[in-house]
Picture 1: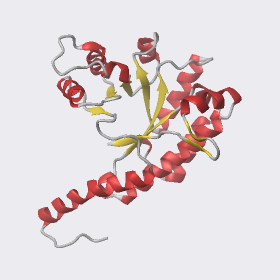
Picture 2: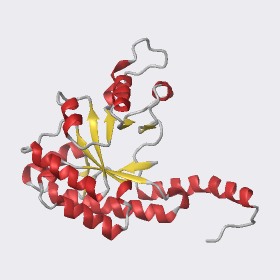
Picture 3: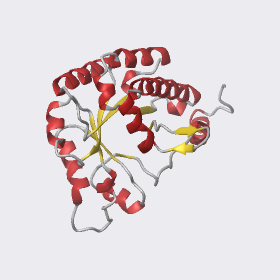
Picture 4: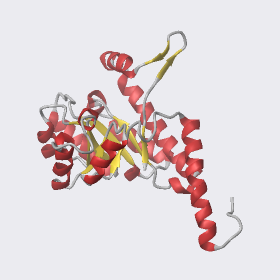
Length: 243
């Protein structure tokens, strides 16, 4: 159904550098705001390009992580609006993720900013849900559309486990609050079966795909498009599909 943008730094001398190493530094020196602005622009552009590339990808979504510093930036709403306008991406297909443990200097201001972003049409997701002590307060105060179950809770799921676990409890909570829910870190079929039995309809993890670069995604979309083309030909009885 969609992708999450993952930032990687290929250093010319040191090679690949993990986000866990360079993101905290970028936040500390104030570089995370221009980096984040660029990521949103690129993610919107790339998602719209993929939608145009394959008819089966018309409703493809894109998730982008937003840091506390970005959220506090007074230009973030204008930056997102501009990225959507330039890319021509449907705002409802962009989801901005805030981590559940996010620390903001002014929570009321952060809530107002999130509401202004929602007014653009974008969706707001709480990432790593369940890992902090303020989870329920965030759900009560923040204008949230979706919660993402932290992978540590998904990792504990077993197909025939007696204890339903935190992950399944979060799914029930989300249902009661009329929120969408995504299970992160699905790595095997046992976890998938448990989540499906609990009526979790969306998930991400290595069981489906490992992180992909742009060429790999486009090859994937092409493979997914081929069966749809065959079905289309059979359904309408034509010999070929116009380019």
